[in-house]
Length: 180
Image (cartoon, rainbow, N blue to C red; front, side, top):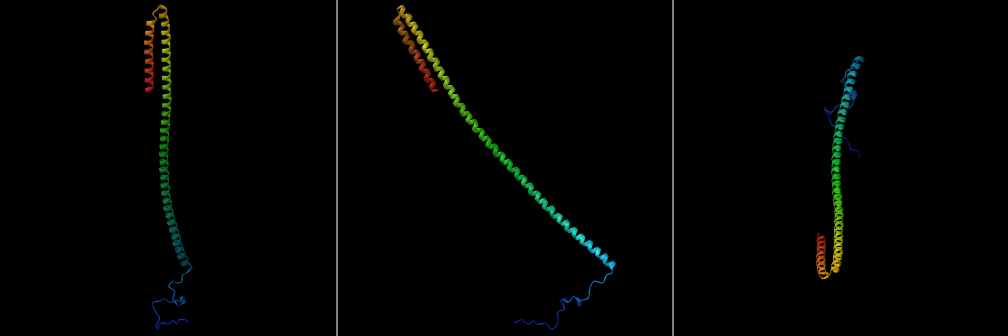
């Protein structure tokens, strides 16, 4: 069931009249010339408002562009920092590779030097062996010369002493070379 609305006995005077035709007009009637002048004023105000809105939008766009410019500057700084970090890491990698290559070259040089030293030692030993063989051949020649002269006993003692000395020298030099 619909609710019943109770009306007050006396109308509230603070409430404005709802019906517009009951009110008296506050604006006076204007002539065409007055209307045109006031219309121009309103149009000027409207253009001023539009200009103010456009200027506000321009200021807003400038602010947005400055913010974007700051973001771009920050990004450029980040890119430069990343580039510098990359170059630093690349140089560290190059330095590590160069150090490894130098170490490898040094190790290869040590092996070659060792082989060269071994070849030198081998050549010295061969020279000593040749010297010993020549000395023994000379001793044989001298022994045969002594035997023709009848001094074979003395020649045998000298031959034994010289061959023992030569053998001791060659074995001593071999042991020295092997120790080094």
